[in-house]
Image 1 (cartoon, helix red, strand yellow):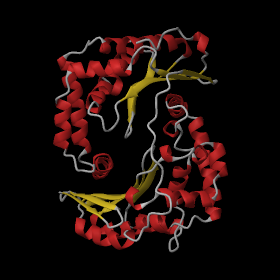
Image 2: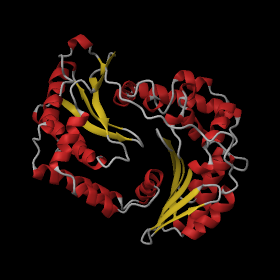
Image 3: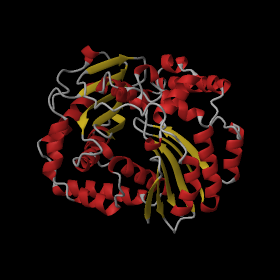
Image 4: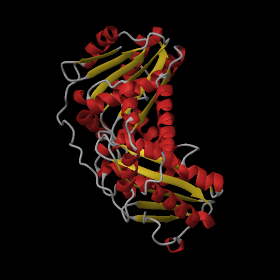
Length: 419
């Protein structure tokens, strides 16, 4: 059973009751992320996320950890391009205690200057760790090229320069302008009573004011079709290429999810079978789909030996061309549908997944969407829709490409982005 309550100041509270569970997954969400940052603010949302674990007026960071451990709670947070989430899970009998801790850190964190300096060093180490992990770093480089000069293309972590420059006032100012009632959503899924949830959170969150600055309007990004080669002395060459895909709001997103599955989304996909299983050109190869409120990206990743770069790119090009020509059978499409539908229903057995799903649907569509509605949309996708979308995404000269590793541009065969 789904319920929704909107407080007088605009804070939303949503819940999905699942009587058969003993646990509750709970999150306090803010509809702001790295795409809402100015250039010199890059990484600020992520920095704030870290700081909310460092202590409040009545709890130290150790108190927070100890009290969560005492109730067997699982507690975490993440920053994305468009949302920031502070979430936890515990047995239903501990929901009040869990909610009290999470609300306290969200509303009453102190941002102690000494804690800021310590956490700054932690985040700088996190940035260095990603730079030393090529299969992570290649995606940051690719996003930076694909959405060049737009904040959605910047790393959620920020840069050494921006993170080193942040002051306490910068964090407080950003919170005041973005952690505003209309951006805040409290969500829970599991064995939760909605009215009890509202009774608990209303006196805490209804006094939250809108601040002086209601945030900034999001500007839609445009794809930058380009090639970027980053030479680095590594064991392998890491590759990313892709094109612009439908947004989270576009009905073509269902066909795109199927296209992604068929191209490189599982072990039976075209790319996995051709590049890894049949040719042995790479251990890791897959396609990926990144969707946002107003845009999206369908890409391909592979890591391979320097000598295999051109054969891998040629195989990727060949498989995309086949899909564009409509070399796709009904049985292929049915298998992809069954795969995705299975994933959807398996995910529905997780309280965490259900909490995140109702939140996404509230932010995007302001309503609850049943699993059956989503499955029905997937089942109606035709071969023509999938092949038409492949032609729209992978058109000649429209793709972007990044390589990281021991390779130079003059070693690449020409026209590998001509699909």
